[in-house]
Image (cartoon, rainbow, N blue to C red):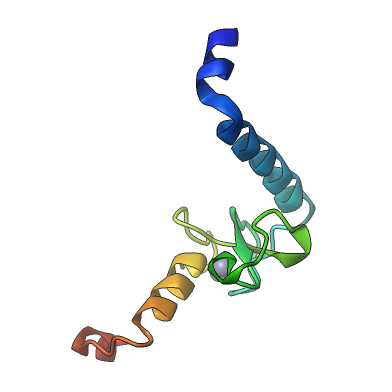
Length: 98
Ligand SMILES: [Zn+2]
Ligand SMILES: [Zn+2]
């Protein structure tokens, strides 16, 4: 029991705190900011963490749908957003299907 905590280490404790904060955040509001439907299960960061935003700053959080997809429109909103950001500068022919 205690062994698991020791093995997990400090990094996982941070992750645990983050998960708890995220669960509380989504419990308060789970309306996806991308499609406007309820049932969001992930946090989207308004300012990208990759550009220096604090991943744990709740004022930078918005609910979004992740891999479990929106129960209303079926979109993976956060995943689609990430995909469109990633392909912006690539201009592959595949993008024209959209
Ligand atoms: Zn959504
Ligand atoms: Zn939706």
